[in-house]
Image (cartoon, rainbow, N blue to C red; front, side, top):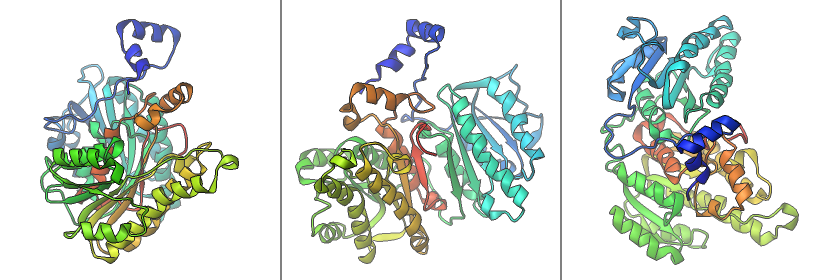
Length: 450
């Protein structure tokens, strides 16, 4: 669905009018396109301590232009705002900040760098999880990074994004995979996020096809976000199995044929759904994506029991039952990846969506609670929480509410199904075993929720 305001604001006349009146001027976000050779298409500025030094080997694989603020730091040439070039990415290692005074390093690094940003810049700050530190002052300083990155995400504009990665001891070798996602257009609609990386023995062998040899199941895959997820997993090398309700069989089979996969027509709420799903997967799975979901919006006072139950059954109960059945039948391979599609409604709540918010918050709770047990088999489980994504569902929203949903985020626009799909594909990678029991919001840093 076209966003006419963005089209207008980026036209020559519209740009002048928007600037004169002081209206929001959202930038068209860059997204990943086939044929890119590196995650960062432009200059990268790096700074900070030991973690930044450890990135030396992977930096040339991220971009061919790397700079530091001081000549010779990390063996790199100096960058200045006066002499350029424009910066496409910034990485700052704040893991050594252990006091209030040292927080000034954030100002020293970012204040001059912000004057030289290109369009759609990506920023990643590295730290250590506060709960892992014994010194309360050091833990306080590391926790302060969350306030900094979330605020900077609201200031950076120009289609930019800012993330914070807390890197656990021994997880340093998983930084390349995280940076390949967060410094590239694959994370176009992700900002203001905080994730924790832990040690993980598995690595990506081929960055051009990181999911090669993996079997993936996507539910609700015939259209919209589900179809985009299937396409992206297939692009990254996975063999895809697409599941949707029997009435969607024609569209499902057509997409499966185009992607070289196969379709499974199944009502996930049927009493025999678990048995049929296990039978349909004789070789098991490496990737399980629970995307199927419905909305039945009413205020609670007007909501019938049937509307309540239908949403809970599809969105929450079915993922619980089906995942457990696959585990019990040993159909989820060692080091498998489970991804649950939640929603910011499950984080912030939404008027008229108590049933939907309950189901999506429940998925987040499922990921957090199940992660330790699944981790014993190397299996990860994470949730992706989309915000306002341009789909057939959002196209049906009344105009005024739809426009508010689009603009109420730091990027001033709605996301695309591809944005959710890219986040799922990253969670599905072997190296993303460094992340489990966590939630990644794909919402343009929505003003709703944390």
